[in-house]
Image (cartoon, rainbow, N blue to C red; front, side):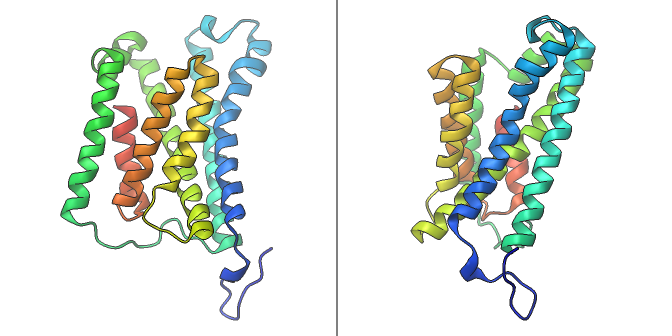
Length: 228
């Protein structure tokens, strides 16, 4: 437990960058648990590989994954506040017009790259491929995924700001690019997939700063940029 001052708040002198890196790695590890489920535990349970799962097995996988990710997110947010005095929902400065315009620019870049990568609208193509039921659960799954990689950005940003004393560099985007991007390289099997995800992660980190670390608006923006 961290030392607290007479007002009950965490002493800033005791908080280190590594504390937040561990929170970022915890969030990243939470994302990685899906691979454990998908490639080891569930194939053993179902007797077949992921690509052979029927609808109910796929949906159950998404539900279990979402529950896991929700618990991991809750744990890191609680720990950040209780142990390190970091309030994720602290009121931020008003967002200026140029920041909204720059955020829209980042969103346009990400959405355009997704459109080119998919050869059309990802949203429509996934709906056609999955059908209404699986599509619904797939996109709920995406909403939880955004929470965890957003937390990697937030904690990675905080850690590097403590270390390097600079607040205008998108460190969080770099951290999520190196972790989340690498994970996609390994799970998708191609370097291109990893680099594509890393680029998107860096843009997400930029948006977090553009929106003055407002976690609610950041979440909305990242959902649009990632899901659509």
